[in-house]
Image 1: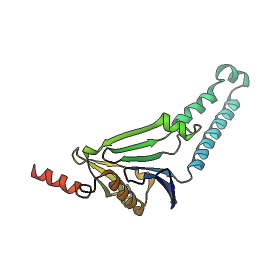
Image 2 (image 1 turned 120 degrees about the horizontal axis):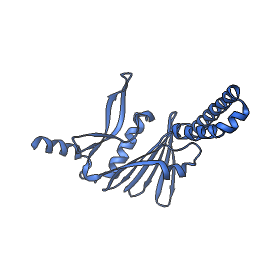
Image 3 (image 1 turned 180 degrees about the vertical axis):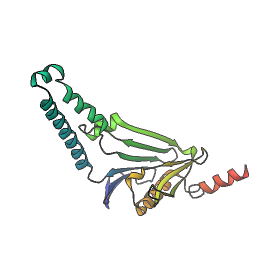
Length: 213
């Protein structure tokens, strides 16, 4: 873990085999942002782009093998270009997920899955999807236990909301964030979001209120 302090911000970078966590938080503990990036993110983008280019080259080769050059230039001259553009919208960049927590206000969960040829700054502006969960509907932040399709035990960081106790994932399961990193994020998230006097007992209070009503 690297720790760099600049302009009242603490920046941490945690690199594991399958992902990288970039954490940015203020010294007063009122703000935190954690971004989860798949490992070898840039390489995955180039591999996907290379696959598209090879597929377009194969289509173009088959076109010239099946039709005459004059027919192709007259009837379907733009087909490879259209296929390339269409493929860019179908085969996207690897997803980048992030959570932004502001003390007392709530949590914003964001996911970006942009175009391969666009820089990340453009993709975040054009294709980022965000969902804000206000503090007053958040019961607690938990590490929940479940099973995947292979019936293996998995752990995931989630929010319990007042809407029938529904769980909202903070990061997609495909990230495979290790349990020790989830515990670290769990502690940082709860410390940032909740007040010290109610953060540790919000879930207990919620369960007590449900049973009493």
